[in-house]
Image: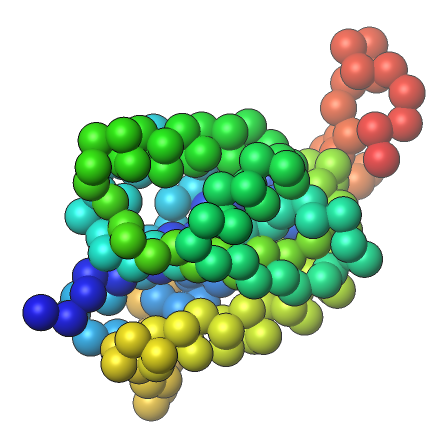
Length: 201
């Protein structure tokens, strides 16, 4: 039997580059078709709720924003035992803490992926509430997708581009998200100074 592959984008669209993994998953769902044993999922910030999906996979490919301590917008790959180490040392938000727990609990139960692969980006800005990806991180979407497609091809489970794209309307589509964002004058983007004093950028 071919391996069951889960391509999982995790992150939070509301905090600029923190949404990188989710945007990767959305682009793959919109633009590519995969064999039936490959699942592409927007995992958001669901944390422990992702355990059943991770348990069912033989290969887990994660897309995420991770602080590798590198130059902003650097794209990095990690495999197998290096993946939890990267997630542990490069936490950028609480969802990564819970996702470490997902991997640890699956391992404890003897269920889950035999192979791990992380495609991560070094965030530029994660304090712009309601902001989209920064231009430098957005430019890494296609390279990240190319790396994920290459991993699938290694497994003999290559995806192929949809001839006309997926025309299904998506309320979280990045173009719509950016177009509908209120201006800084209309909506505060840095929090209430009475509770979060100082420059949050």
